[in-house]
Length: 307
Image 1 (cartoon, rainbow, N blue to C red):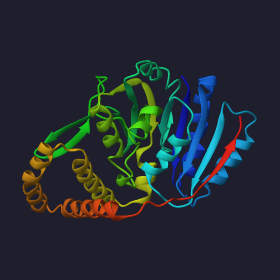
Image 2: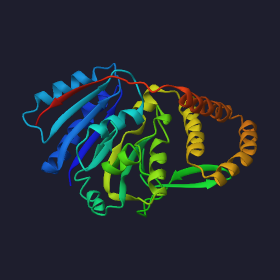
Image 3: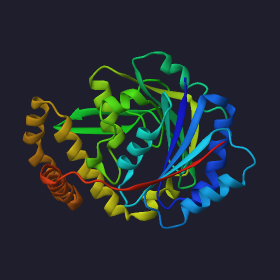
Image 4: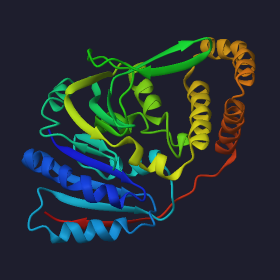
């Protein structure tokens, strides 16, 4: 079973300097199974591309080829990862954000799950560094309640999961492409991995959480918290929650959502959470724009550094 590792990057040179060597090391442990490491740069301005090229050329040997794809305009997480998966040649694509680095032999327990042809994805144990603490994540729980789809962190004592994190997971490439990949409506970030997992599960594919496949996640150092204010992040999260509901709900679920919506809006106003209202308006505008906007083609550069 062949593997491609995909790393989306936006102004993450400082993280790549720390974490890319660890990814390359782990690729070496898998030998010829890893076909390539694909770094998709989302129009960074911090010199990420130059550093990746210089670092790769400075190494005496590489366990696999390194492919650098460069978006000529900033597209957000979904589109950036989609480009990487389309370029990949492995049976399984491993998605790692720049603020994530793998522990030793992190794929040893995850890859055997894909011997089952019905398995779509495997989520890793995410040891998230947050406010001086380490919080274990990676298993998610999601459900419909009062017309909304809600989700939360699940305990790591099970292997079932409602979704796998787009920042640290392994996915069957053929299924990813067959169901359309990440929905780019969610750009720049959040809910795209929940949406992808939900769509795969809905048509019968399986998701697993693998606690023996571990990564370290420097949560506060990532591109989202480095480039967006907390209120912006929350507003985008609300917007994308509405987009998820409107694009995935059954007719019955959608009617229930409409009936409960005034209740949720009044509750948000009562607690002074205007971002909920703004997120709703943003979601309406995003879907309207998607309906009338003509498809556009964004250029991309490509560099291949052979092993």
